[in-house]
Amino acid sequence: MLGSDSNVDSLAREAATVLAEALRNPDELHRAGARERHRERLERAIDGAEAALLAAERGGAMPEALAGARTTFVRAHAARAQDARHGAGQLSRGCQRAPTREACDEGWQRVESIVAVAERSAIETARALVKQEDPALQNAAGLAEKAAREARRIVDERNHAYTFHADPGFSFGEGWYLAAAAVLSDVTIQIEPDMPQTAQAGRFLRDAGLAGRLRPARPRPRANKQLPAIVAQAFRADASSAQSRLRAAFLGGEAIPEAIADWAEARVSGASPGNKVLMWIRTGAHDAWRNTRPDELLELIDLARGVDLVPVLVGDAFPGEVIPDGVVDMTFFWKAPLFQGADMRRAQLQLFEYLMQAHGLAGQVGVTTAGMDGPALMGLPTLYLTDKPNVRLGAWVGAVPGYQEQVRGERYLERIGETLKGWGLADPR
Image 1 (spheres, rainbow, N blue to C red):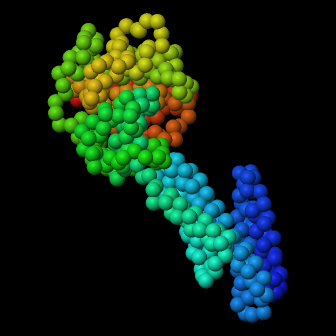
Image 2: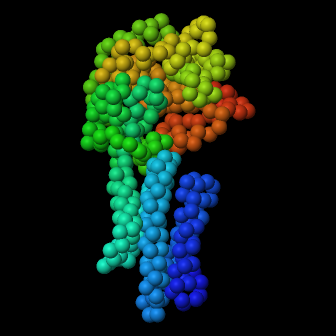
């Protein structure tokens, strides 16, 4: 409460001065610390004006002082309601992008508390103006009510869905773990509309039994970076059940189409009958530092062949002039019409399933790339290489069976070699 003088006029004038300071430079509120000072001054102005009004109730106030205190009280509350609306909007955008679902929900709890501030200020302005007909103050009260209404709308219109991106240029892997999170938990999905693969995304999700989880697309969805942790949580609770549910949803109960088997046989024809290992190649423009290293890929190929594994190259183009002997080339497989149709996502998973059933596909290795995520969730042992621990997909290590992270460093190729040796001896069927 401002001051110790019980004189209404003094309290009212001091509160009005503080409010003027708070409202002096609205265009500079974006500067560092300005918004905090603005809020602190509004609180002081409200406290001071309220003290003046309480003193007036005890008697002895001049009409001018009483009117001044009421004006400051209403204007300060209106400004606080508008500031709260602004704060709720800013915070809501930030918490939607939070890296975990828990952090997102905690952020929205703070948004709720800010919205409550706007609503309290709207109530206070309305209460202060009972039987008052001052047009300027009525306008201020209207602004407070509008701000509170808009702030509440932010909460009411919160978008709980995650976006299934249908732009071919976007991360394909996010589709795998978004669908997986919906199968394994209460996740809702909105499909990116009017994109080249919008129809295919819808087909995959409906075939997976997720039609009831689909919502119309609208702005400000949750951040997809929350999804790997949701998937990991389900696997940690019951890995066998989680994997069975995903295989049933993603692969369905029907036999693998002959066209996919024929396509695979044409590529594998002439290869050694030994166990196979997928070697993923990434040469993307986004985060190019994550791309496959040509020398490292050749070393991995040598390690695989040294333990009688047959390397199967998948992903982007081989980063060299000549593919080594004894290697199966399935690079750019997803561009084949067979894997670009209405059921493209299920067809791609069915290819890997066929290789496991018919050709001893025992695992996959590569840098962190989107294509590995689907097979990993289906049960294909997976090892990805990285320069440092992966914050998001690292959540699957120790949760998804057979999922390994290998940070580059001393003797890392030796450790990979031990993993490949185990795959070479495994019975993937």
